[in-house]
Image 1 (spheres, rainbow, N blue to C red):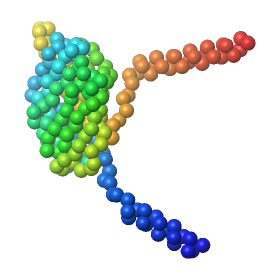
Image 2 (image 1 turned 45 degrees about the horizontal axis):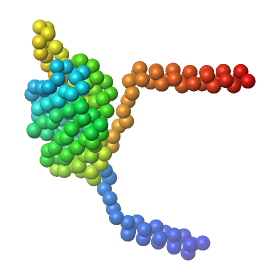
Image 3 (image 1 turned 90 degrees about the vertical axis):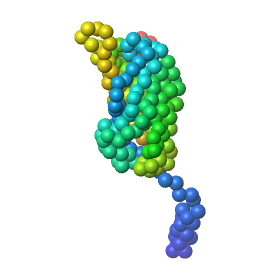
Image 4 (image 1 turned 60 degrees about the horizontal axis):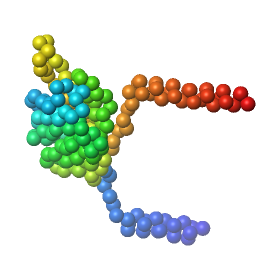
Length: 199
């Protein structure tokens, strides 16, 4: 019996020794914001063809996990980025790049959109560099844009906030969507009970 255990242990050690060691995919969270004025080609955030230009993007809080070396105020993308609302399925054409990594979106969903508020879910590949460690992996970015019109009704101010999560966090549906799904399930259940007892 001891001989069998030794053989099994030797097999496990050999398997571990010959397998390639792979670092874990990037893991952590980073909250971002912008420096400078945000502009949009649309008249408001409900425009289905708006292209929103973001200036310099920076960390607004210290990162966590693999992003922990990025402190608040660190520039994430000095050239900024843009969000093309018409390209939702392709990640809104969104990308971030600097010396600490690159995020290239390939999937996007409009979670909420109205004239003064736009909430987007963006997912893609994050390739770390510089102070960010780990292997390239999937990440998501939850973006919130708000528009506050001027008192005169002409023009206004945009604000932006985003949270980069690696690995991706799932899309959280709006409460109204959850309620609608619940009503649908309850109706289906009642219909099934009615059919069952009517026989």
